[in-house]
Amino acid sequence: MGAGGSKLEKALGDQFPEGERYYGLENFGNTCYCNSVLQVLYFCVPFRDQILEYYSNNKSFVDPEENLLTCLGDLFTQVKLDAHEFLNYLLNEIVDILEKESHAAKSDPETSSPSEKVADGPKTIHANGCAQKEPLVTWVHKNFQGILTNETRCLRCETVTARDETFFDLSLDIEQNSSITSCLRNFSSTETLNAEDKFFCDKCCSLQEAQKRMKIKKPPQVLVIHLKRFKYVENQSRYKKLTYRVVFPFELKLSNTVEDAEPEYSLFAVVVHVGNGPNHGHYISLVKSHNHWLFFDDDSVEMIDESTMQTFFGSPHELSSNTDNGYILFYEKLAAGNTS
Image 1 (cartoon, one colour):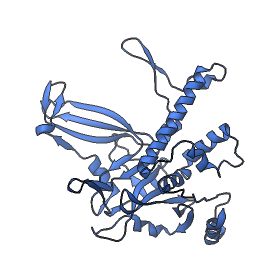
Image 2 (cartoon, helix red, strand yellow; image 1 turned 90 degrees about the vertical axis):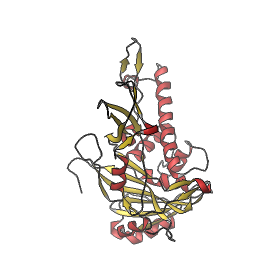
Image 3 (cartoon, one colour; image 1 turned 90 degrees about the horizontal axis):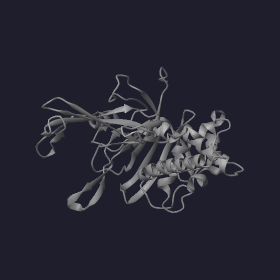
Image 4 (tube, one colour; image 1 turned 120 degrees about the vertical axis):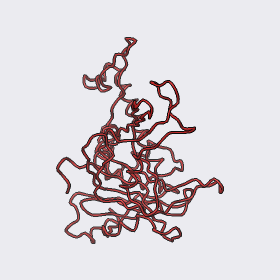
């Protein structure tokens, strides 16, 4: 495990989880954005299990865990990205690979099995009589994908138009001295469409004033929340970082859902942006493993107290030297009745 691992073993003593290994990731020059995300995904159990199984079945590794970064390195090119952009790119790239392999397997009658032949899901018969396969639902979709419902109510005829869209993460606007709960509430707040923003109502066949709101129709198993900490300032023609203090709880209830039930989530990781702007800075990650919080900074791995997490909420003052701010939050859905 290296020097970092021995420090952790000494710090945890008998509490060091048996069979667990913690790896730092070397920075190959501006790769902290992907290191921070990969460290988080490594501790996302569904992701790690599926990736290791995939590459164990497709490549010969002496120890697939030690080669996890190498495995994932096959999926992206070394392009400088924001950590949030990289996360989305990585998940979508994995989906593309799984879809291509599934389609290739189905086109080869010698390699396709009965279970693979129905992996694309049932066929849907459209009004024109043509059959069209449903999109392949991969393990990425099952764990990370949620569904939003955009509801628009015409204020003249009261007709509600609903449009669904999928998401891998929720991008939330932030305010000074706020919380994730208040950000989610604002995300689903009602917006009035009037003046130049009127809504075209199909029933009225004309532009009408309307009310619009976004609600979560299907919460994902792994809820990823991206805080919009970079704001474009027009008169300066550049992005400015918002170091606002935004409190993120260890336990989160989603109240802005279509159904009355409020699913509960537990925080297991945070990607932190360090620095004053999007074009310069550093990324680190905080990950919970076996009830201990770990601090990953490229190849350095340390244990931190849970109380230290609040230092990454942000600053309550506009001008502050603290630029270590929570940027991407990862919550895991708790099983019904399990709130511990």
